[in-house]
Length: 608
Image 1 (tube, rainbow, N blue to C red):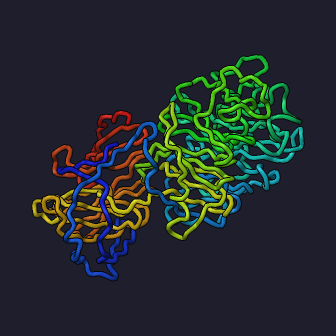
Image 2 (image 1 turned 180 degrees about the horizontal axis):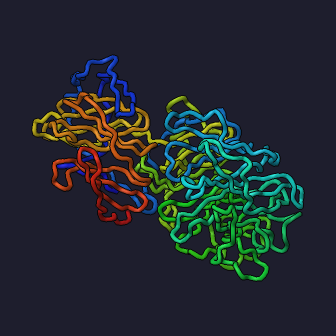
Image 3 (image 1 turned 90 degrees about the vertical axis):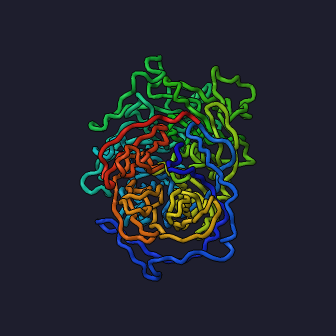
């Protein structure tokens, strides 16, 4: 990853936070930029004295960030923040592509709530309320949600839920399209267009996850996870013998399905290149099979790999992968003969199905008993977590992580104790029901046990975000930023020896400092800010580190972040160096007084 550009060498990773607070500043946004209120402090902050003057900077730790595959080593310092509470059966969170202001919370009881990420408040009215569901006290109800890739223009989204009835009287799954008309925060409950249905022999093992693929050539194909029909060991009423439902291609149960959605018509067809199209007796919707209860799954938005969290029977819990490189699908993950990487003890004499694929990772029931599939982190707020797969276990109340390079899993660890109790509020984790992503790729945990949603954040304190000569003594100084408190500070250096320090302004929620440069040509460095929720940039113009005024800059497209500021075209105006963590592409935005004039793509960084 590109980590910055400056006339002097930069470093990250600072030692203990030894700065004493010197000013207390309140920042209020206005349409024209920023309003500044120094209610409790003089505009000039006092310099830092005392023992801090004796500290010398001995070394800098340069951050090495993997942008392809998953990185080695342990997970970095993490924390969790409660972002919503008082919910009823929260089961999943997601967001429409490009919507950085809202997080949609799926409740098993049929309600979908909207969390406003800018105000950190729940909208009073639900986005949608489904009625007429089966009993939601067990494994049925509203189970999955996916937004149309073109939701911003067509207002279509898709739900997976169960209603009463069916051949066995244990419910019917509907995967249906719904629409938003008019108010973007209220969906039309009467807009249902049913895409596919299937009956359940038992009320458990419903799967429930749905999602669109980010893979090239896979546009508008919706993937649907189905359980094996319930009861236990894929046998009994409604389970096809010999072999069970999961191994039988005449039923949709125990599968990963793929259908092609016509969003305008509200209909679905079977893609002609699905692996079992044209096979006598086989259901063409099937993409992969041999699954027990793939409750929570995901696509890695960078590599296109599908990670499948398949809940086990009595012995093992497993994570399977459907590789993007196998564009034809057709994988058999082995259930009911295989449970995880071992023979299912219920069928000791049954031969392993031909070509059955073992999971990339499994664990015994001494670790956990109900795996909750997760996500490869591709957000921007925790660079050292990028590329790490984060998942959980409902029964154990645990959050895990591991690294996966496409062939091998390493560094499996429990990270629950890093996240909980939370640093703010001391909240604990009860029963995680899902992980989810916002539009920026930041990760959230839904806790059905205590009705809360938590966001995974960095617990890192101070870091270097810029290097510039603030006091014009001919020596570069460090601009520091505390990700937890949003406080800025300057360390004044003389030949890399700390001489004094000064606290700067505290940033409002969701804003961080991403660069420092003299944007208005007055000889004083200014701050370049970035809002991770809205993707808005802004400049704080400073005079001797005292705020004078602010100006909103351009909004970045999804996936891109500012990683450096420099005058690339020699016009005397700072420009933005951008980086896309998914594609590893760099780009330059040429600016004139913070107005974008043109852009230029730079080289893509190599994997790793």
